[in-house]
Length: 250
Image 1 (cartoon, helix red, strand yellow):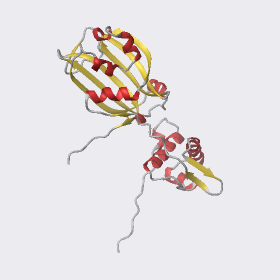
Image 2: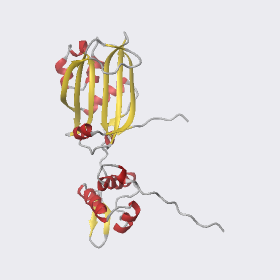
Image 3: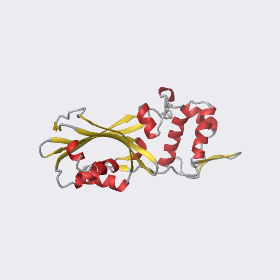
Image 4: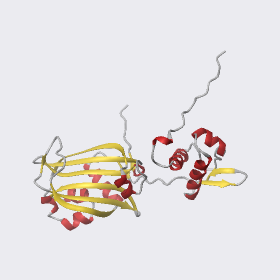
């Protein structure tokens, strides 16, 4: 007769991150609620069971539960336990798209508030493998917000000749929709690469995130018919603002 076996789950190594342990635990519990592993009305395991599962102190569990209770996701009830009473807001406001037209529509549809935090005229800091740099670029560092909440930090290098045609508009609006509508600009090639990263101290401050929180980092390069890089951008999105969906070929 075969002996029964149980799957042993290794507790998360919260100590490997500088983010406070109760915040990490709250994020993990929030994810269980969002995935439906803990549906609405579900009673959470006891305090002692959660301490044992996650190998954390009693105060850490209490702090995580209190945080989620303030967010309206949990309801601790004396003598009965803690129950799931809400669902996390689905605030993935940026879909990762695969065409330039779709990208322009994304920025038009999100209607972000643009906060410029730096501007100068400079050379391109990185020369892409394909393409020739323009002589000079208008550099803009900005934060995009929606509903008052920052969701990305973006460093833009726009060919200065293009920028000078409509500087006020470029300063006040998202660049890509304006760029694609300019009849004198012909974008021959557009390329972007997405990688997963973490927020450094500066990005964490601008995006209102803990240091080392997950981010999505996108580099975009647009070239014109003469192979000149007319637009170059490094974008850092909050991890909870990005949604990636694609069809897979069978």
